[in-house]
Length: 471
Image 1: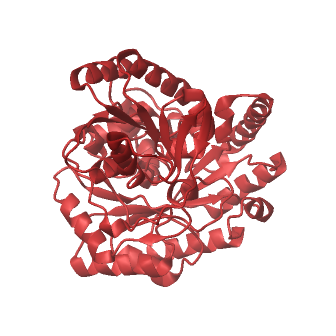
Image 2 (image 1 turned 135 degrees about the vertical axis):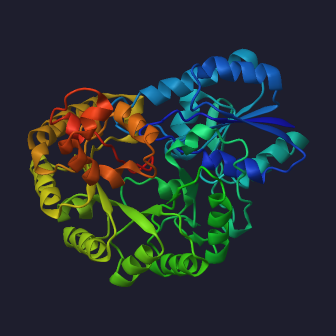
Image 3 (image 1 turned 120 degrees about the vertical axis):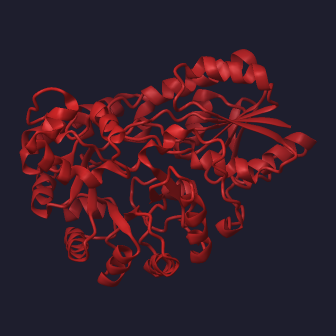
């Protein structure tokens, strides 16, 4: 069977992220199938490109990965849905080959996306085994109703099979090849690696359990470091990002990974996602000794009531303790706060902003809550949009309290042109790690030199950061 794999993601701010999910699924497909990867991230005309690729390759099946439903700034949540609608329309113009959707974005709202986009099939969550199973049955004409978490149409209605498949042992999965990865992904020097799948936390809004499940599947520390060493031989790789939902949980595994890095002499800096739960001085020290360049933390709120509503499992005091441990052990910390969540008041938003000012982490990202289902519109979506405007007004009025915080929606510390210029000058790794140094240099005039004009206070803050795309 001839299969075209499409990485549809086009988010490039502040840096593009290699399509690790699509490549992982692609690597598990038996070699007897002919396959190509079509990455639309850098395409100037993705619809024309996909039609041209299909005409040339003549696939029997199309596998399209939907990485995100929203853009990272939450500034126009309908853009991606329109884009995916147009993309599938372009595919239908030139082929009758079945379309399979998958990826993190699809797994958030599979039934709704099936009904709206009308692909032939959809796979919820991990596709490493489910997709090859679907291909085998389509190739042989066997029934498909035993494939776990498969969506399909029957009598014009969306059906979804139960998720009863055995957990995937990621130690048995092949390392996705990077042979066909566009070189532009490595302009930031960042390579993505994964030490586990799954997340047992219960954060109210988080999609990781939908995508990877709630049971942790841990990669053997020696195998993980072997992968780092192999990928680190690429000349372009100067930084690793560990893409686990949370690297620091469970702490025993994180500590074992760090000890293996130290034993093997890993000298490439790396960054990860962390969490206050179970984070202690021993882990902070091991991470520092192993070359950790920074930790991104989903702190979300400075209000204990809001944290409880979000089922975060920790308190505001836990966030303060996490920051203190990082500062004591020389680790840079970047905290993400999501403001205006369900049931949160404007007074609680103001309280969180005061908390951020008092916490004074190395860097911070302030985002405004957006429900994924808002992409489908409706009265509730309109009401939430109006509340988001009020939250942004509160942030804008208070921004001088947190000079090292990024607010993408307001353009604070978020300048795409400046991102590109920093990269051209050799800055590598997540950009949030340079916020404080860049802020000092701006006052000395280097920002004027880069941008070619006199800086204003707004311009002096233009360095970005964010969770999803490894700033």
